[in-house]
Image (cartoon, rainbow, N blue to C red; front, top):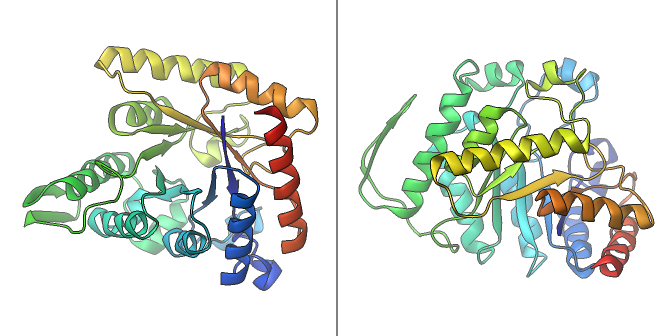
Length: 303
């Protein structure tokens, strides 16, 4: 089992504690020093105020934030958790991703999803109603831009007629693409187009708002993993599929303590989960860094 730690850059109310160059660098370095495996950030360029008032959050640009984490570390993976694909032109997204992959010497994990905030889509001029189709063609377009010359590809709102992107990503053939979402459609996307799947805990009450299926119990997750395996067999996929699940709720900020951590990690690993996303409470950098260090000690004892 591998562990990815949230960089709490969404806590803009804390000022420079987290959403700053120093904050990102210090926490990312703490993650690496603790022997953990990666760090992640989320993506909300321009959310609606009503969503923020209801518990939503801001976010720094994920590629910029992770570039500061990359500069402060040497080993840990750098994960977008997640990048909303329909918000961006696919070739600009591909260029940002490969730039981070090259400059970090091959450490990017590109977690992606379709998004669900209609008001944010509207503000960005993005296509909400066709977001699933846009996500599919964006993944295909990015992978071709990363691996081919003289690309011809036409999608919704863009057209390439013999275009080439350089340099190539550091990872070959390209950074892993992990597809987020709990729905069967998201799982099919992950199996058909991705290298990983990113489900997340989601209550039945929240499902209409997040516009994806509920995962409330370990049995719910197991059923979704079974569907992923069935679909992989149906399409003849033989390559492994990473699965990254949030340990302790959607934000990963209620991590089980003591022996429960080992038991939970073992149970999820037995289902096929390969990565766990975690986060910690705290309003200061010192508190967060201490939590990362203590969690790293606990992980070292169960490995």
